[in-house]
Image 1 (cartoon, rainbow, N blue to C red):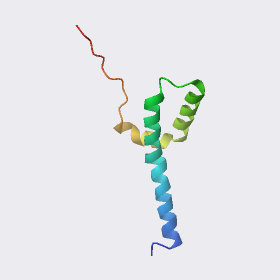
Image 2: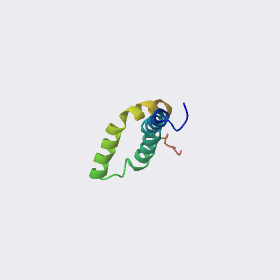
Image 3: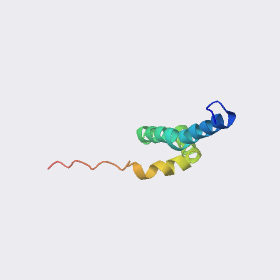
Image 4: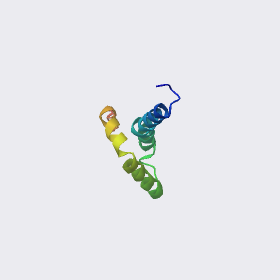
Length: 77
């Protein structure tokens, strides 16, 4: 099976699309949400919810490896 056969091209294309859908785009969405969550307008927040719904399988794949909890406050005495 050479690299130019239709089956090989199809498999490579499916692998690239699956990688983008499950890893690349959800990582970009996570970064976007992390930077804009507290300052978004209502329309932008609806768009964020749409992105979360649309890329939910990829979000579930990446969720165990990411930590977006608030950082501890510095208490000055």
